[in-house]
Image (tube, rainbow, N blue to C red; front, side):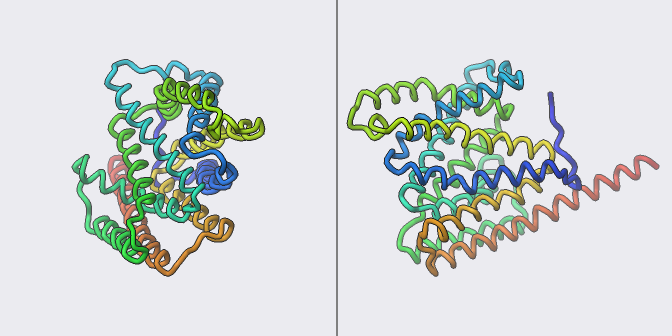
Length: 311
């Protein structure tokens, strides 16, 4: 069954609810991972992949979409594997950032992400930037460079998070898949190596995962639900809202994450951070303004064409 993207003027109340719920979950997720400090991010990734696969497979059974999980052609499975490695790496780095008190850096990464996606579209897809988009990217780049100069090091966590997630999105743009089936396939291709890694960890009595209590293992089991719910909400939102509207809501997540970092986890937010983030926020504001303007212009042109056709 195909789902049509709503016109740009449509703002479904349920769609807004799903979008807000999705980005609230993603913005608050550091609270979950902050309680897992004794198990390294690389080891915590193993149960996350397996439990996410279980949750998604149950969802596929309930919605009767298990047939969508299987695809023909080894080439598509190859792209699925690459996407899976990117999203797994992104997850692992994010958890590492939370555990190492670098949530501010992760927030910056997801602010940069939409602009990184534009850059990839330019380089890989041959898309053209208009002047406003080019200005937005330039302003954000100045922000990252300023932050790097002020703190004395490249904000690699922010950049790798942005690049990995933008690359993941690029693969899905080049090789679109049904949302539930796509992520299920990605977890499936990772499952054999993950199961092998799980066995290896359990055979090492000194590993943090092997020494974890039953309560910690049960808590890790929730990672499947924590991962799957916002993804389901996201795809429910995209079916009910124009993409430009979904894009506007995406800034809820890094804003919440930044608030948690500074006010709950008490990470430092220095003048260097303020200057770097400030440039990035200005770039995002310019980018968002252009996106809304272009969507409105496109809708007005379609409405005019429809009116002329009806006469």
